[in-house]
Length: 167
Image (cartoon, rainbow, N blue to C red; front, side, top):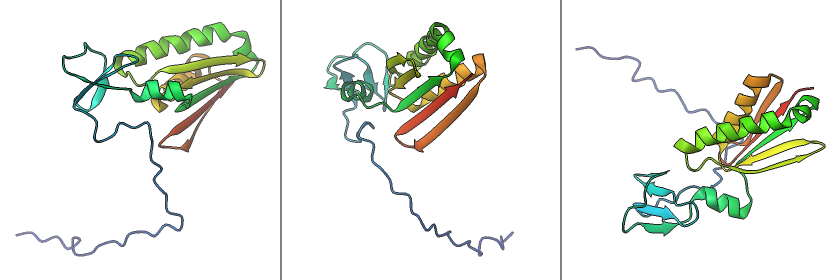
């Protein structure tokens, strides 16, 4: 019989001087959610633990999904800032790419949507209801047009800031 000598030695847990406090996300699906529910705004269906696009089953409870709640509260999860001379000159092409990526992403993930697109002389800001869509849009623009891409997880659980710049 083989005995592992390393199993006796236990490494002590490292002490971190600044403990990370968990910040609750009020837009996360509650644990006490009904098994089958339908969003009253977008008609997405909550079934088997996640939201999906499908026909509303009979007897489904009503619930407002987190994406619709974020849109109503105007609190985005992701923010994509597009700046620079190139971004201003090619704004229509870049926004077409944003709409295309959102359409592809939204077909599989109902909670990932573009909330708003605001353009001014400083640049363009696209706000999203999900972190993954914001990162995907930033990566798609960077892949297509190069430039400088900065992804900032200011609070990794609830907010993502993506900044793209090309002179």
